[in-house]
Image 1 (tube, rainbow, N blue to C red):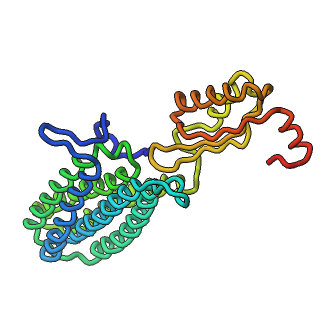
Image 2 (cartoon, rainbow, N blue to C red; image 1 turned 135 degrees about the vertical axis):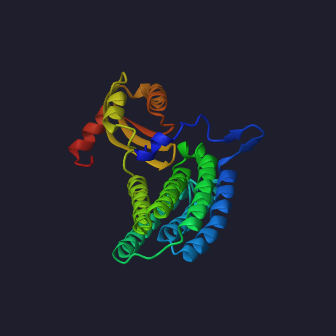
Image 3 (tube, one colour; image 1 turned 180 degrees about the horizontal axis):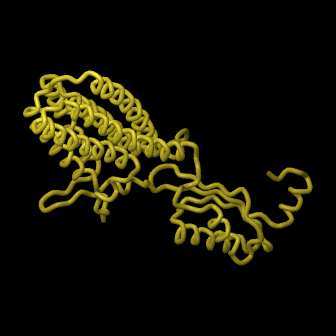
Length: 314
């Protein structure tokens, strides 16, 4: 689960489908529309940033370009994730969304480093900017980002992939707000350093989102146990089942958003109760931990003892 300072801005969604009177939009359609609006405004904001000589606008336009890349990767990942499993890709392409989110995070970190260097250079050597057009262009960018946030905020709770795209747009939304504020301050004081400060703030927002996303997706790719589950608690719950005398070789990992997997060996005192124990164990995993895909192996105590005697047990 993400722990993000921006979560206080979100209203928890009740469904992964966008709905309002007269409009119903699935996550893929929302991504397509968000991609179109983001990429369309990128060119306008970049041109406006070059014309006004505002590093804040240029930074925000590059952020919107990266948002477009993130949205495009997310859309591609969702499309690939729908492809059926085959003898080679036995789980299908569900992990494509995690890979997309991972590469998004690396792109964000790289961009933040470039923007920080540029903004520090501007602080040392201020450049005059056209504050009034800068203000209107940044305000338009803020409106575009708000619209895209609205498109994506329901689906982001159900998908790590859409969550990554949502974080891109959210940080860009706050970045646009920072540029609006900088333009107002420049108009009021005449100090162009506020443009560089806005760029530094945008870079910080990018970096904060990137680090969180990178850590989360790296954990999934390294097959770490899900952060919302305790492997010790899972083991204790399985060990507490009547007839189970031991649990070993327990592994829990995440394939993609909402798809946790588990494998374990259960040592039992009476092998004839194996089918009943399997049913009980699967029910515990499903109802208590939300794990529907579990591979469990039943072993009699004699098998475990022989294994230990031969030194073949892990």
